[in-house]
Amino acid sequence: MYKRKIIASGIIMMLGAPLSAVAGESAEMQQIRQEINALKQSYEARIQALELRLQKTEAASSAAESHAAQAEAAASQAAAAPPAPAPADNINAFNPGVSLILSGLYSNHSRDPAGHAITGFHLPPAVMADLQPQRGFSLAESELGIYASVDQLFYGGLNFAIHPDNTVSTEEAFIQTTALNHGLTLKAGRFFSGIGYLNEQHAHVWDFVDAPLAYQAFLGGQMNNDGLQLRWLAPTDTYFELGAEVGRGANYPGTGRDKNGSGASALFAHLGGDVGDSNSWRAGLSLLTTAPQDRQWDDTNLGGAGVTNSFSGNSKLWIADAVWKWAPNGNAYYTNFKLQGEYLRRVEDGSLVYDLNGVAVPGSYAATQSGWYLQGIYQFAPYWRAGLRTERLDPGSVDYGVNDGVLSRPAYRPVRHSLMLDYNPSEFSRIRLQFAQDKATQGATDNQIFLQYQMSLGAHGAHKY
Image 1 (cartoon, rainbow, N blue to C red):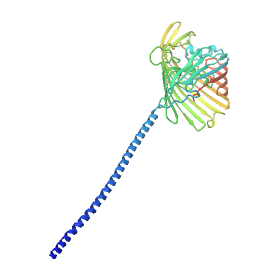
Image 2: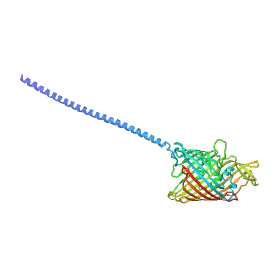
Image 3: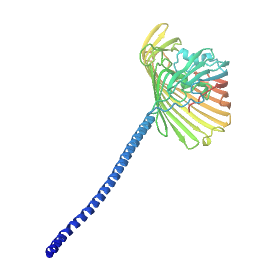
């Protein structure tokens, strides 16, 4: 019996040992699983945190890109927007600047100006009357100008000329853009044409009392027009400007007309720059075309009888101009020098009506004529300048067609030399003394003396180069 209990106990011990081991392994495995689960939960929490940071970072990046795109678009719009208008020189932006030029003249002529003419060049009587010199004391051309910015897009100006005979004319009345892109400027109204060098300047800016003979013969002194002008200034270091005009063309060398369209057009190009610190220059080429109708002038035929001629056709005027200025190191206060010259060449063709005592004889007409002037102005001391101008006209070739046998074609070349001295106490006042020997009329030499004052009152913009 005792043996049977011992054997049973052994069997139980043999069976009980593996069961204990199994129970211990299960607890360890459970612990491991718990640790794995805890680790998984920890990593999942960290991954979720990282994913959340990633989402926030991506959102922030997208916002930054959006802001950058908006800023770039705004910058592009700002670059494409028209620039703010530059304020007018010495004139408040929205308060009109009023400028008054007062000018008086004393003239002494050795010959009676009543017989003054430019031999070989056919000017209408009204134009010739305006160019007729006066003797003694008189008012020279005085000017009243009003200029101001209209708004952020336009600038406007009005300039009256008060003549010695108490008449008043409108020299300029225009509006002009100030904010067009690409160097463009558009002007509309009445304005001095941009052809040549001297034409666009007001008379009080000229260095001599009167206009050169070539300007008198081919432009009646100065050409203004009612119409449109477009200028383009190239974005280059060297000054380069192109311009085009269309207009009514009512003034000489054109005539008034009652028709649609343009009566005159002009093209011009200007080029300029600096040479070192002391020199600068500008050169230009211009073309003015007009279509005068019944442009009349008084003449004398070969028989000595007075006749009236009338021209209709095409007129083309070429102008080449050049200016050279010198001022030591760019300082023109103490001394400076300016050399200026222009060459004008006119070609006309069409029909001519030769009228003697009411009997009209039509025929063809063709003429090629030219003229030039050259002048130098030297400021030898502060406030004091001296200048010399020489000029000549060439009658060229004139073909009267069937009227060749009755109309004269003088080969005379009008010439004039002028010497001037002026005193400029400031930029607002000038007193000028001028001597001239005028041989514009064949067979007549007119020795002239002029004493002139010019005073500028009120706001006055800077003059062109």
